[in-house]
Image: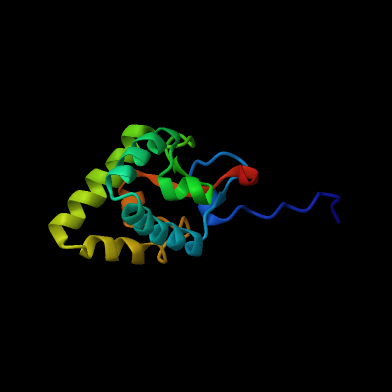
Length: 140
C-alpha cells in the first residue's frame, strides 16, 4: 500500500486544449445566445452607426458592445490574452461580414450550430480566427 496522494481531477477538455488565463470560465451557450440577440437589439437601437462606433472602441478591449454589457471577453487562444483590435475586426467584420454576405446568412447559421459541437463552445468564426469567449473573472 502506498501513501501517494490521490491525483487531482483533470481539467475539462476546453481548459486543457486552449490557452486561457487561470480562473476564467467559458461563457455558456445561453449567454452566447443572449449576446447574439442583444447585438441585434443594439444595432437597431443605435441605428447601426452608433453600434459601429461603440464596436470600434470595444474591440480594443477584446469585446463587442453586447459582450461589454454581459461582461464577456474574447480571448486569443494562441496567447491567452484578450483578442487585439485587429483580431476582433477580422472576427466581426471580415469573417462574419464577408462570409455572411457571400452565403446569404448560411454561414451565420452553420457558425451558430458549431457552438454545440465542441467543448470550447466556439462558433465557426472563433475556430477560424482562434478565439474563445469567456466570462469576466469575478464578474468584473
